[in-house]
Amino acid sequence: MSHQPERTDKNCLNCGATVQGRYCHICGQENIVPKQSFLGLTKHFVYDIFHFDGKFFETLRLLFFKPGTVSKEYVKGRRMRYLDHIRMYLFTSAIFFLVFFSIESMENVTDLDGHEVLSKAERLDLAMEVSDKVAQNPGDTLAQLQMKLLMDSTYVIGLAPPRDTITSHSLVHHDGMPYKMIARKDTALTPFRTEAKGWFAQTLQTKWNKFEEKYKDDLDEGYIDFLEGLLHKLPYLLFLSLPFFAGILKLLNWRHKETFFSDHAVFTLHHYIISFILILFYFGFDALKNTTGWRIFGTLGGLIFVLWPLYLLIGMKRFYGQPWRTTLGKFLLVNLLGLLTLGLLLLVFILFSIIQL
Image (cartoon, rainbow, N blue to C red):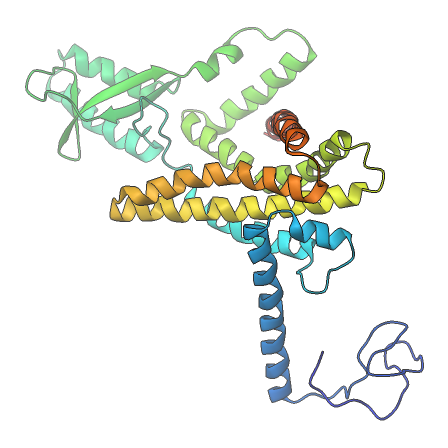
């Protein structure tokens, strides 16, 4: 409700209907003086912010401490005190993915015995250093082998601190520090080195040839670009999974004739909202653990993964009002079918990303 004075005329400025009271019964517009001062605009802005916050935090409080209550209240028609589930989903998902993409950079890949895979620039720097070593001592076969591996894009290269810097003969020196170089054949390339058979395999072969032609000797960067592109499709994947999750709930509760698909969708949206918030808490605890080194934050982060399924279990119990044994059985089925659905959707998104190469 605005703090602007009400108009003396009773014709709605929006639709022309005769207004009885402060709001038009046809279109809902408030019958107030259209001219507004800067102070009035400021007051209206502040009011809207706190009105949103009030509903947001009240909804959030019940989502945390009484799972399933907001969904149950909403489908019963008691909605004014709660923030609309779609608006809340859009708000929390926007915050979640803003934080997620700010911390989940693919620049440093750590899948080589727990050590970071060298980036393009780091690999080039190391190759130049090894090349100088070969130039100074052409008979150094170990350095020649290291150079060959560095220049072969079918290998991923990482550096590990050596256990014994005195007796080890396979060290490389990078930025003045000794490291043991780790090289591993990239098995992801193997399927594409064989002759493709069938329409689907030939399509993948064609896409791979274009991928190789685009990135040439810098396939690591290509992998990073592909994975980052896939990660940026994650919001669409989760959004697309919403009706599937609601459909699973509908399927498992088909005897509840009074519960419509839209009711299951409301419960699903609230579950996704609390999931986003819990994962944000995990990110926060993980950052605090890395900053302070305190184990308590690691414990709190681990607790999140206990609370996450617990919220869903309690929410299902409260929303559907079934016995604990029935609820637990359906809870297990929901998780199993939900994981299978996400896996299939992820596979579709991966194939779609490959086709887009």
